[in-house]
Amino acid sequence: MGRKIMFTGGGTAGHVTVNLALIPRFAEAGWQIHYIGSENGIEKQLTAPLEQLTYHGIATGKLRRYLDWQNVKDPFKVIKGVFQAYRLIQREKPNVIFSKGGFVSVPVVLGAWLNRVPVLIHESDLTPGLANRIAIPFATGVCTTFPETAQHLPSGKAHYVGAVIRDELRQGVASRGRAYCGLLPASGAADAEASTASGAAGSIQTLSQAPQGKASKESADYAANPAKLVVNISGKSVRAEEPAVETAKAIAAVEAKGAARVETGGAKPVLLIMGGSLGSRAINKAVRSALSELTRQFSIVHLCGKGQVEPALETADYKQFEYINEQLPDVLAMSDIVLSRAGSNAIFEFLHLRKPMLLIPLTKAQSRGDQLLNADSFKSSGFCEVLHEEQVTPDTLLSAIEDVYQNRAAYINRMEQEERRDTLSQLYELIVSSARK
Image 1 (cartoon, one colour):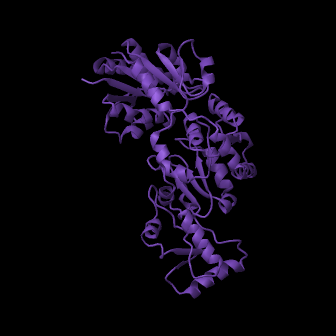
Image 2 (spheres, rainbow, N blue to C red):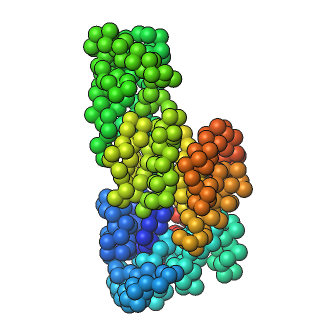
């Protein structure tokens, strides 16, 4: 029988992505793979497509920093989870357990310690979160993303490995991202705009609203027959095969209104907005307050979070999704700059892909302050600009985004100087060497 590994971690996508990056390595090496997560958490959803693993759901609670009646019930859920994890580990007898954190990981680490199974924890942030602080005394070692994290750990337990970047993120294709989001291919948009400016009967495609999770039909039509483009000028649509005089009339209508240029879905730089796996109401509100100004310069792809899409706001230059998973590499590939929270996994992925960033970290009132530390570290290295949530207004947001875009070459240049480590291989070898025989 081959060796066996158990993964754990959940609650947010950030507590799952490193596991998702490691799992294919262990599958290729012939390991049996199990995952212990919550019964209905995001980790169950994100690992569902992976046929090479067996998922186990356990009870889990949340240790809150504020008064809540759930604080009375949740300790009992944690105790129940410890017994469930203990029995699972005793039955499956894994060689090693890898924990990415989140409150579901606490019962698993305790269950592993009771079964004397080695555990490696991964800490993405500069300082350990509450769940990891509870679990660290029972772990064999802690793998860190920031070298400074060792200062906050027991002597001898820290292993600095750097940021784990998923292999698939390196394989994104910008044209696929534009098709998925319903944006005109960049070269097509440039050609179309040039022909319109010269007074030709050519056309410019502004794609209609893309269905949630799919590229628009117009994008597929464009790929099949670029000659059949759709002109959308000041609300009027004209197809390329229609008489040139109709196109000329539409163009004249825009010129009569003093339009600077015909807007196209793909000719503009792309601004990707991410509020974390659960979304950010504060970022969503700020962006939508400044939407009319932002879409003058950018095509925007906005990952809003579950239940936070507002279909009435959808335009050719504003595309909304609750969450993007499999197509994220392509969407990142087409993006020129990124507006994001400051979760460690995400910002290191942007760094690796050389994406200039504007970070709006969670406040101390919303978190333990880890995102503030992450953002400060990246700003001091010259990788990003930071706008604190308390300072966000439509004007400050517009100004900060414009600054990042105008200075994007300088950000990219500094990112290019950062050493790229093969963290995934290093982490894989560390886990294998920690496994019991």
